[in-house]
Image (tube, rainbow, N blue to C red; front, side, top):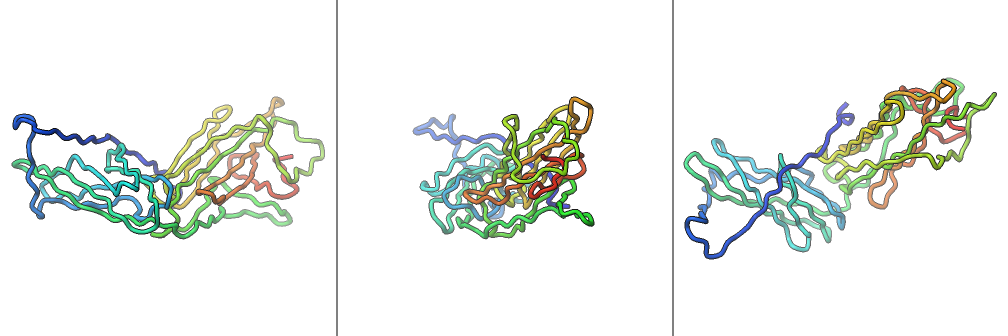
Length: 296
């Protein structure tokens, strides 16, 4: 399933531009403008929509003409967008903050390497600052059993949302809270009931995605838990994936339940706030009602 792919944003070397005045001919080489046939074309390799008032990054690349190569890509945008070129390896990357709604240009210049020398070229791309269509999160497939009211999700658990050209581009953050309950299960227990609470021993971490739908800006965290167990969380590109590997035991050697809290936010909106628990790595119970066997 495409939304279960784990993708990570990776940007490489920072390019710095400098200029000299009255440099001697031996210290500076003037590069002629490229003919259109070899100049290449600037393209946006990220989403064209950006949020308003929120810092984001967008990647750009140049499609070179046949038989040429491109280097030293320099990016700029209007000053009130606070443009700053940052590290990139597969793309030239620009960090910016759109102050208002509407379209705006990103300008670029680059050097084209030819078989008999080099020349300079330039181009532009258009981005659009907009709020976009709000994200609606769809829960994982639900497993129910006859006569049982609890909701169960099989692992890996994947929450999804629809991605279109105008889906809200605001960065996302998922806060993951977890702990292992080493207490002995009470005799004749019928399970816990709301409110389900974490203790002071609970731990947490945050996973961030630079865009809700851009596969190049997915956030991934693999957290090592107790006794070799791991929790893998991937966020972005239309989904939130959570996968537990391994299990836990209490001091008496019996299985110990794993408690998990997931809060997904996008800007000021809370898209998901869920508590779950598990005895085994294969599935989780949603802790939202009475009779939850793994949280009491």
